[in-house]
Length: 379
Image (cartoon, rainbow, N blue to C red):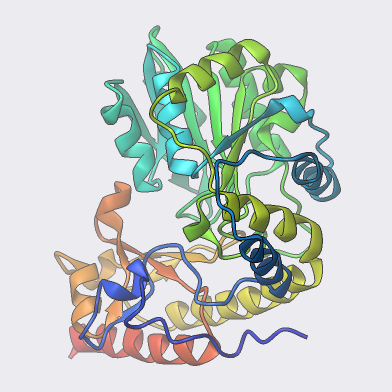
């Protein structure tokens, strides 16, 4: 029913992703922005809203709130109250607001999405990064002992990425429970970035929100979500925080006061349609992303000097290029026509992040360029 074989030409448009390499023969596979059009029901909802013709100040309405609640219950078995929602113009403002809502230090795991590293600095909070570790099979894990060692008496907030960007982990219930026990023992608030929660690629797996572990985890949690990654509408600027504890919610809202604008009305309209009307499109998208992931993993496995762990969630491949012996692998791939995210921005020099949320034809070209780039090192 849905065509993920083709995509609009985004060159020469307002696209930040494609504009980075304007005038150059470089495929942009860096920022987490897919090339697919938004689902038809979202486009129809936007057309209806535009046809109204008035774009004054707007606020969420009951059926939108209901669509969010129904989505979270249907997909994750998580029942939330309407007043737990705090609407935001993006997830990154939520990370910064969470840091502003505390006075103590901030803890996070690395490698990590760059705003996790910048938000504490922007708000004058001390950041302590703790490296994730890999087991013998290369699977990424939380390092409980390192988290314990890094946590000091003034540490107040844990910024957590779930599913994890960039390593692609879908954390298990056991891992989440261990993290919740650590947070409770050390009296930490947990801001959980769950923007990729709908993009679980391994069949049979299901996302479990950190806050859904139980009342104690919920009481110390700020969960950040948005339809933007799944339905490819990040430019519409619509996200939300789910904060069950009323006192913590007030602290968070005070941290946003005067600096975080209202969500635009088109973003709100798109959000409702995405969560309510796009189930078939969503399943078709997952099928395409699984195929792309499998092709990328097979290609990397066949190339000397590269390796990557299995991508359980997201449409982002985290590739270890240190085996190539290059000072700057991202620059090398860019010189061969492939624009990837530089791992140094995530706290991991020598790695690159590969966005496979693209058409099969784009992926064909990208994998060819990847192979040529690696072969050029070994000539």
